[in-house]
Length: 199
Image (cartoon, rainbow, N blue to C red; front, side, top):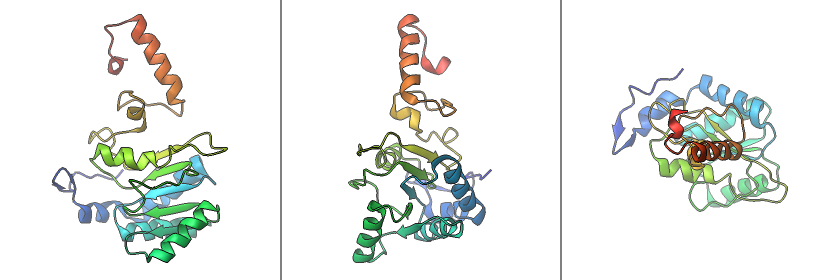
């Protein structure tokens, strides 16, 4: 129920200050926590936020709900950041909310949930962020992707099905994307002229 229509676009991306004013609200942060509780309770989670203040506000919303959460950003002193990430690796922290610090090159393979709280128009950034949860780890069988950006279809943002080569607007209703991919491949073989987006 959050409109980004009034958020200006600069160099192909949302204006970060205006985006933060729109997205970093108590209501939306509570919804993020509720969504996490419903779909990913107890899973090691990396949450991606618009700015530093949003990272801290979202971490506080989790803590207020009894969840072990911390925030990290470029402003976090190196040693403190190291301690937070080590506590996450040891499962003493459930959720790490971050602002552009745990994207490309981050290796936290125990991560089983990615929480997108930062709308972006960049398919590359979406893939980098989502990829932080797709690393293989002993005992890990899944990665839950919680997309709270509200605009995935409307603003042509990438969504998890796209990572499997599926149509961006596909509604999976929790079904396994690998199964859906196989079903669409079978249909394409049977009906070669049919495009997946027509289904």
